[in-house]
Amino acid sequence: MGKAGRPRNQTARRQALVSAAGQAIAERGLEGLRIKDIADAAGVSQGSVLYYYPELDDLVLEVHRGAVESYLASRQRAYEEAPAEDPAARLRALLHSGLPSMTDDPVHGLLYELHRRAGRSPGHAELMTSLFAREVALYTTALEVGAATGAFSLAASAHDLAHSLVALEDGYGLHIVSHNAALRPDRARELLVAHARAVTGRTDL
Amino acid sequence: MGKAGRPRNQTARRQALVSAAGQAIAERGLEGLRIKDIADAAGVSQGSVLYYYPELDDLVLEVHRGAVESYLASRQRAYEEAPAEDPAARLRALLHSGLPSMTDDPVHGLLYELHRRAGRSPGHAELMTSLFAREVALYTTALEVGAATGAFSLAASAHDLAHSLVALEDGYGLHIVSHNAALRPDRARELLVAHARAVTGRTDL
DNA sequence: GATTTCTTTGAGTCGAGATTCAAACAATAG
DNA sequence: CTATTGTTTGAATCTCGACTCAAAGAAATC
Image 1 (cartoon, rainbow over the protein chains, first blue to last red):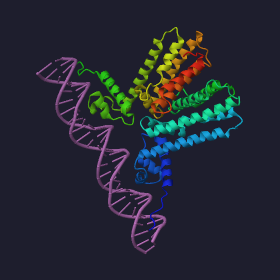
Image 2 (image 1 turned 45 degrees about the vertical axis):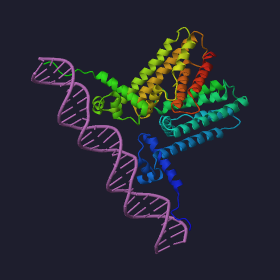
Image 3 (image 1 turned 120 degrees about the vertical axis):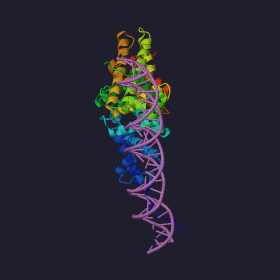
Image 4 (image 1 turned 180 degrees about the horizontal axis):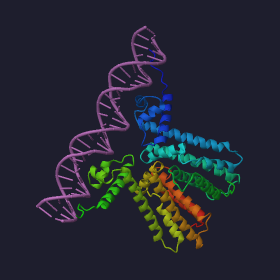
């Protein structure tokens, strides 16, 4: 009396749909998201999209979750790939991984696009909160290690400074992806690094 | 053979429509904007909305323009109402007028909502750029006056510091209106003021 | 009051896109 | 091979909201 049926490799399909949806959102924005676009990008029919995600919101939430995780992983990686014995280099790595490098950086573009839902959707708000908290934690660690080894002389608590750095990234990043003509990526990076120099006492960041 | 016809008080009607649209956008967001909602809020028929704004985008652009102007005017007013002989008080006034005071502050909510279009619409990008530049100018003036009178000892150029302050406001504000559970308005204000204290050398802000 | 032009209405039309669904197809168990 | 359940399709249908338009209303001019 064994169970029957075709094997479920839903995991793979779902993953493909999440990826396709992420691509579609990055291209046309949340408002321009169409089931047909997702289906085309994933190479399946419209019906299949609904079969796996009867609620499109669930799919968008998965896209958001995936974007947050992969973005955090990339920053963590950047941080860890810098020499552990050089706190300034590690901080520099963080600073350089937190801003969109072009006005149409796809990763940041997707994240800002998804964050837009946060004001009206608790699920998205939670993801945004989580991203912020974990970025703050990364910076806090980097600053505390530098302070402990004497490499930095912090102008305030590591935790508060970390908050400022992440908020600065978000503010500058928002203007960059929004095509603020007066704030090019280079200029934003300079300003961010200058701020980091000021609060750590390192003039060589 | 004089011209005839009913007088045109299009100005008033347009203003009413802009106001109604602003209200609708603040309530349901750009994605949820419906002609019917605008018409209802303005107390006219759907046809009238199209009569004055055949291109809905033009109406949204007007809403954005109005929001930017009134927001800037309110900050300018806050700045000027503080005693001119007290640079610290003036800076404090600016700092307190730049963050949403609640998680659903309607003014900031509307502005962030409209800024969302900037990435895909040059008109909106221009408005956002203009808002940023003028906020930076306000802060720059406040900082320079304080520095000139010896009230502040600036940690960097007034212009650079002003950029940081505005970007910080934008970053914190974004998280507040997005319901970041870990960053309440009070906390954000504390962090912003702490930053201002650090870069001006005033411990009494 | 007649005329002209501006304004307003709302029912009707139209279209884009979401949703449904019955039939076809696939893999596994027995 | 057959039965059973999982999967996929895409044409038909449904829904919502933008857009059209002919007719009615209103102010200014003559």
